[in-house]
Image 1: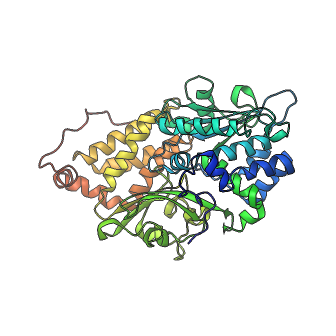
Image 2: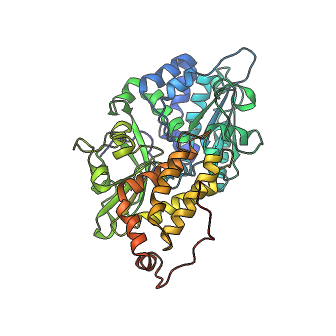
Image 3: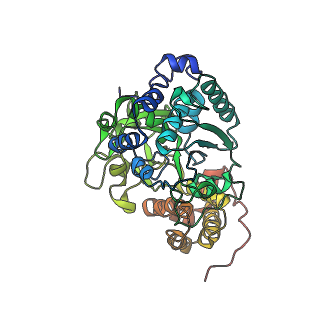
Length: 453
């Protein structure tokens, strides 16, 4: 059994309440931080831990904290990004639902380390049950003296608020989240200035993912060096994985980073193999925004070694034959899945969720959706395949925020690894439509669109 640092007590009855969480050792990190550690010492422990952002980017958390500007007379803020809306990702929602006090405790310790007197948890608007759970947990912590004025007699004050979002995927990007938190339309900001210099209300701000903040608790309890002993290389600690798709046992799993991908998929401790005894066809390892890999490449690296659940191993081979850890949204496709249909589904999502601020993303995501729709519904041409590759290249790296890249990478990688399936849709349109939709005739295509210049 792999070591559990976040979900060790997840099955304890009543762990979502303050009293039971406290009985299991909860809020020890707050006591230790406020009574025996300075803010600088906490930042140093997080640096020693090697913790990397668990929301997708994988940037070292302690380093990000150390960038926070500390001008005199200016407020500093910590914002928790709980706007979990990446297709295939649901581990933050799980954590907030079943062990909310772990996040609250992490917010208190992290806010103290950053010198924030007011902090926010920005939750996706559709997650109303989780919003109510967090608000109840905050009230319990405040009644017990762990929030509010003079926490534990330390002289440190902290108010913690839950802010529902409007349900926009773009608000998972930290600057768009900040814009939304200020009451404006959630459009990403041009950087610099970065939030660490000018974030919420023009003040120094740190934005961290739910899992990243929760991981601060075991780091402070056990020490940064002890935390760094778990995992492999620069991928330290544990990681929550949202396992979905055609798996025998989908769900949220906490793994030690460095676990072989093959073991994660096929062992009974984790996913239990592919459902219904079918073969694995492909995997999206880190949520819909990362490149898809066929079975042979997700199980082994380009060097023929076993691929591991780590930031470095999943990226081995770059965008030619590698992927990314991303947000940990692990989606498995069995042998019967249509990669054209799944790629079209992803493109529909990114076209819908583009804020429209950058023309390559606004127009390009629309083009990709339309062309993939054309192929999927039996009206594709061979030139459409190269057109999709060309459009994805024109989006990638040409937008203010990473949503453009997130839309381009799945399309480019699907064509790279499954081009023959795209070609089959074009040469056998009636069979493709019948297979995917159970129709014996062509479905109506989208209205004709002009070819791009």
